[in-house]
Length: 110
Image (cartoon, rainbow, N blue to C red; front, side):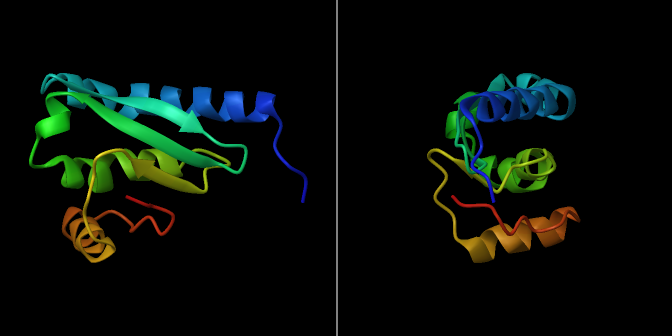
């Protein structure tokens, strides 16, 4: 297996940002929040951060697991997704996914 290049990681970061723009960002902005792509590694590990009202929202775990993570995991080459400041158990994330009717993102890390 060949390692990703900086150009590939950069292109993947752009793909992640574009997917968030199309499918998630407007929903967050409607609540005075946002999500930022902080880092995308060569291996496909994505680190995000909530911004604005999302940083203190009590529903951010639901937003992450039900809306943000599935979109990011759908981007080709993404292996894991994590978001700064989200401290919730993997069990809770599985329950959120089940309640939201979305697949559990096995590659999701808090």
